[in-house]
Length: 242
Image (tube, rainbow, N blue to C red):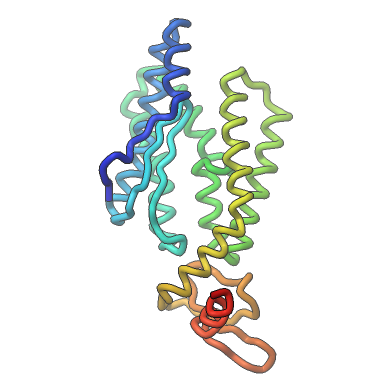
């Protein structure tokens, strides 16, 4: 769902546009920006299909961010489709404008870069979805952050970039640091959602502690020789905190 006043433009977008204008690169900037809009349109279409609420759509000079106002424990299938629709929209438009060499080069560059497993790029979202199919929510988030950091280090020390690319990497580093700091917040929010909404999933798993809780899974806790429902554990956890 799209509400009013969700479209935002970062102030750096105007700054980069001005620099490109005075350096006779404005045409390339328009092409680059058009590809970004097309990419984000893919995510927006996916959100509309699954009726996800969109909080913000932020246009950056070197990318875009669509922020959703949804629960953490959403369908992994829906998450994957929404994440992959951005790159798919790019690929379709790349085929449509394959005769334009500049458009094609920029499109492939953005497509390749965006699929790298670095937060907040789509590549990191896709591997996080895969991890959540295999591992616990907490471990999946940790693993995604570790891979993001490692990939970023490899890029910085092994590939030569221009000044604009270093600005992009600097922005990504800031976003990654912010995400690392919010790791415990996301896990606590995940637990709180399970306490408040108590979803009844078909998949069931026996675990020994809350650190092993997975998305889209109903849990039974084995403590000693006793078994407890997820609802009982969440109630004790949050009633104690209250």
